[in-house]
Length: 212
Image (cartoon, helix red, strand yellow):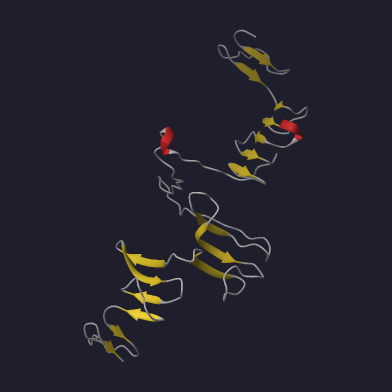
């Protein structure tokens, strides 16, 4: 067809846009009976659909959200060598009626452990993770089922908590904790003053000393 075209039984008098096409009803590619407004089924699988309500489904023919991905991975690859300059995933809750943006990770059974993992450049070594350990055989030694875990996986890397871009509390690979110091040489090392027991208002521990 050169120019516009209309494929319909009921749209009497409908005019296609210049060099465009109007199709009434569901459209399918690789499927004889599409169940959505637009459906692509290569090799007989439910690969890609767009519903009349605007929902997009990948791996499902009945998406219930604006974008629903079933049984697969969602991958974003950033490569500065090809000119990529940004690799952020942004959930923006601003606007005339702002809402609280949220990220949900669900675990269906006690064998799962929803987590955010941080890998090295090879994608084979986990350096750290934020995880709800739902497994009956916990990933971390010493934890119990349903414990929340923030930790490292490497035998050489420490875990830091910081403020103002400065490490304030450090846990090394031996389990030693440093407060105000990143190289703890005992189970608890404190660089600075410390206060143990009932806090007496107005009384501070001496510099590099201890108040008990």
